[in-house]
Image 1 (cartoon, rainbow, N blue to C red):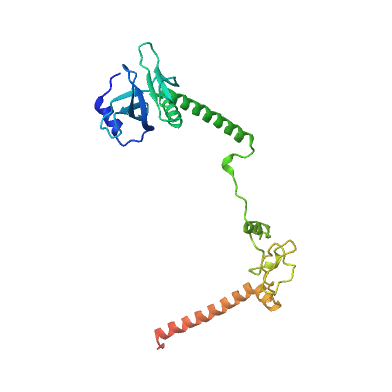
Image 2 (image 1 turned 135 degrees about the vertical axis):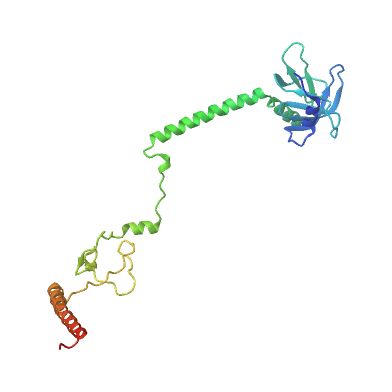
Length: 255
């Protein structure tokens, strides 16, 4: 695999967040001596520097197709990064304490894309199982989950208990008759407050008293059409007479 040195150096020293960073002891390839190096883990690449403030890394380890495991070595808290194949190199590293060793082994074991691929497959499987379980629960319920109705408040419940008024009120002589509505037989409450019934529910406001039509008004209404006709004929004759007089005055006196 070909790697661009400049790109790797920039990626190793840029401000992108690191998955893990710290000092480790690295055993040399030719010599068995351990050298203290500053390691930075970004993605599936493990960079190591001579010092923490170094501008360029000394080397990089691509963590693909490898296993991270504990090993017996001269240094304490040692672990190894082993790659498959007879000619592949094994990197032996050692931490400064037990906690640092466990943290590095855990981080390096999860750095490869193969591990991420397994995690994604497992998450997809769990999501599919949850979706199937939710679909089964929705199918078993009587109402679909989107038709949720909120619980009515106390004011809405009191409105529902009030007697419903008719769509069209009955009329007598062109006036609405309120006493025909349900509850008109009760005496009106003159205290100024409707109050509550026996169950504690608010009563509707008192209805106005029924308007009584006098006999004279009824007679006038009954004979209304004939009276109008007589008045129309009377005024018509008067208008015709006035018009005739005016025409005669315009013509002047006869010779």
